[in-house]
Length: 251
Image 1 (cartoon, rainbow, N blue to C red):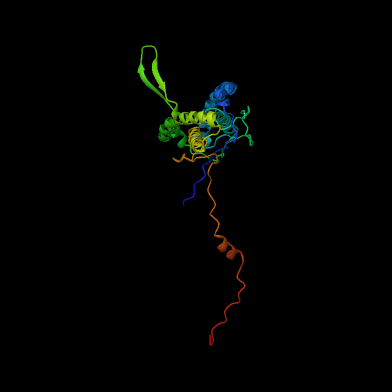
Image 2 (cartoon, rainbow, N blue to C red):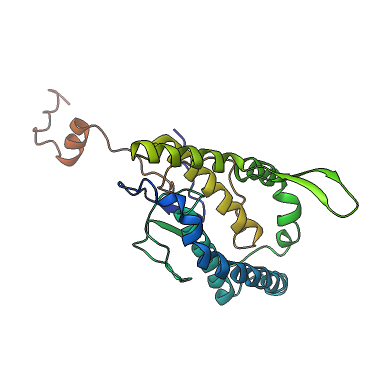
């Protein structure tokens, strides 16, 4: 098997074994303080990305304080999404912080790039990422304009595959008290795909996001080669003590 290359954007999560049957019904209400803060954080995220764009064009580097801020916004957003309706994977209320919280059930890390391509920043978000946008529209949903009137457009919003599966998992949790493991793994894979693309178009990496659905809460890395069978391993660990064969007569 070919090893799976580790991507510089690593999304980790763990499913809590005992989730409340009913808490998901009111998480939209409990998360309102986070939503209000995230509105301003994402406005700042856009401004910071624009400043980083200019800095990369001039220096081929993403200023570290700007990088850390945008990484913090993505972490915060992922924790809130994991708590609410991007996954419903935890009942632990998200902390109000941009910093990494190692013991929280959802985490995100992006390797800081030493240098970035000046040319790629010009085409990442509007050209190179278009195939990913089409896939993510299916995962996360999109708005479809059905008609235009004099005063407004008539638009229908699709919930996306993540929304449908999380809703199914929520009703299953309500009835059985269990989160279906297969749905959880698939939902985590789609969220991981989306966060990789966001980091790419936000200029935080030059590594093109893979067209790969890495499912489950553990982000894949390059696997180590499997150990040899026990008998072979023992043979390699213990050198032979048998005497060397005597040379043939007359040699």
